[in-house]
Image (cartoon, rainbow, N blue to C red):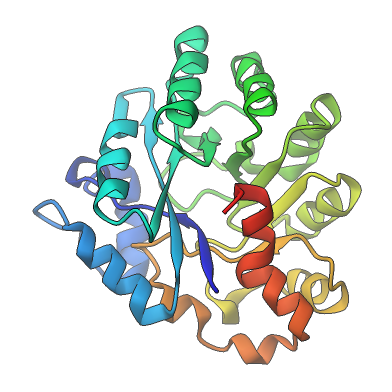
Length: 269
């Protein structure tokens, strides 16, 4: 079984946003002109052998780029293959908490994702803390981005130390998933992951052959590593992301934890 921990089934307004221009340039693609049918995303999962994909809503200061209800409608078209990840508007903390509660209790979403660079606020900002408490109460993980920012926004908010480290100290019960491996601070991210039992890493936005050496060492040397597979689809397809997997030198237990075991535990799949 393979679970993709970070995907998007994006709307045109999200995929054509100017902040993503750098990603389209790097991948040599162009954003779609029309809404993408859900079977296109499922087809890409099939081509890469992915069984379940977690697709995320996106909320920023300008509002919903991919709304929670849109994500729910996508999941409803392929409920055995897709699972929803909520996002919220940080400007209205109580409404954000209520929306998270609705997404988990009524829509069946598996997690909350807030991308700090989109708000230009680190995850230690006071506006995040009511959401962390609610995640603990609901039993869902907080997913975020670590490392430099590929889109056209500042990168400082993606530092694992001090930000993720401090959140994990303040909320030891909170399960945290840092997406995008943390580069160029991957060693920091691995250190935070080793330090805190509820902190995980996902490999979204990176192909296997671009994983930093320190991440590969952690995965290969520790069969109880807390790294899970992700793509950041549609920027990278699962098939392309997994090419060269055998070259990592993972034993059977480490490979299973990476491809599905950690995600099954974290997202209760």
